[in-house]
Image (cartoon, rainbow, N blue to C red; front, side):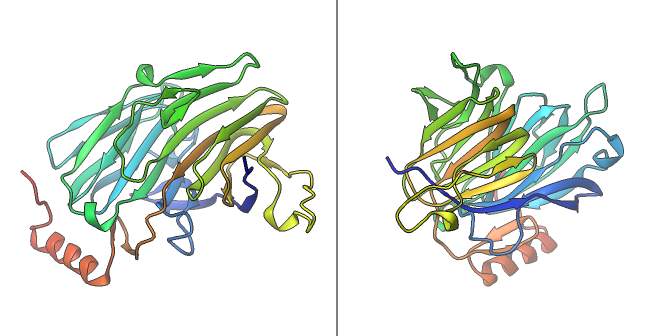
Length: 295
């Protein structure tokens, strides 16, 4: 097995989004293809209601999937299909926008005023850009939880760990989405398909996610990996497994992977297509009221 080294590390940046939501953006700057098939990762953890209550009022999406995972609090949502509901603590919503949908997401927070969650955007390949919109709504109790002898806990939202498969399935990019908690000094080794994009995002504590690719000696000698903390994104080089070890206070992180699409990206706001002509057509339809292609 070839253990993946760290190709790049960055810290999530403070960003204002929606109607005035203060969040931290880990993916979504620079080259839109560098985390292919993933386009954006927003971290909207806050214990201050003024940071999030303005929410994300009605807006369109086309050509992508939006994946919302909530740790604390509630997010009320409704859309142009007539769907409405609440994403609560431990829940995930995997929305395939496909040919087009208009929706809103309004964070409500917990009774203590906390709103902790993440939204990930995954690109759709050209052949699926105009597919029928759909949802895979997952309640917290339906997420498999693996509790290991060393005290580690793995929530399998999508993908397979130790033969246990998560509830989100039939996604084109063959993604994996894990929520992993390691106690102090515990280790987590996990296979990842060679050629897939693999990302780690720290959400509590600190840990070592592997050696930096540029620091590996010519003879293959591996330096001690750096300790990485909260709101740090790791983008891995190629390989077929990752190895993470926790620091003195333990670590909790999201491990996300998927098969790159390798297609051109034309992206503006909440719509992602393959060409500028397709992007202009989408906005023209939005302006003329012909954006929604389904009943």
